Length: 323
Ligand SMILES: Nc1ncnc2c1ncn2[C@@H]1O[C@H](COP(=O)(O)OP(=O)(O)OP(=O)(O)O)[C@@H](O)[C@H]1O
Image (tube, rainbow, N blue to C red; front, side, top):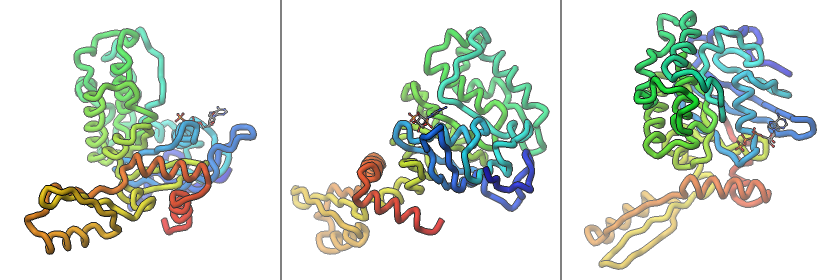
């Protein structure tokens, strides 16, 4: 195994000028003869929200576990908050927040007691900039568990349990937060509140890396979307950038004199300008639509699986292009 930033030492702070919080290069992971990750590359900056998408079994959890220091990689250079996760010490770990895919423990504890107890571990890692842990009642309110604060963990519903998982993940005011399918089982209101919570954390410069299978959620939350397929990151960008990679065309729809029209164009802005120059006020119901993230994702993954088509070409172009 090679290591990045070997001289920086586990638990050390990244250099002050460095805005890169996660740096992954050539990450490989093999389980016996099954090579799951075949050279994963990406970076994340402070305060960015990255959403990792990919089919079941693509290696998202594996990637996150390597970054958390829970799993030893087979090869590659990985740095999180300036340290190699394989050697991260307690001080380094205190700066991370982790929400695992499933976590079933502490059933007899009451919600507030548990968070208060777990939070106490972080107090020695308080700094002038980051006061740790999070105030327990504020935290409970932020995840929407005030009414359940004195209930036993074992009696919570699935969604309430997931909210608690998130609270456990952030009680130490992490600088980097890893969430593996955090919204699985949450109702739409809880999901929406969770999105607000993540954006709030990012506004306070927390870097967030999360996995989900909910593409609408990815589009809403992500500063950048990463698609992991075939053991590599095959796309990295905003939902709009990804959509452009798969199809350069947008669909423009409008009505004129009550009649509907539709046109596919690579230059929607110029086309719409011309439309108004020619027909002015007669144009109604204007709509410009690029491929949705769902269209883009399905096209990319399908074409990668079959090994042809523009999605495959886009992925290759991405791999070959400048980072
Ligand atoms: N401890 C392990 N030993 C052997 N194989 C494993 C182990 N953990 C994961 N795998 C295999 O590695 C592959 C990637 O698994 P991983 O859980 O990382 O995928 P994922 O993208 O998170 O999937 P999902 O979307 O279903 O959660 C799968 O084929 C899985 O069976």
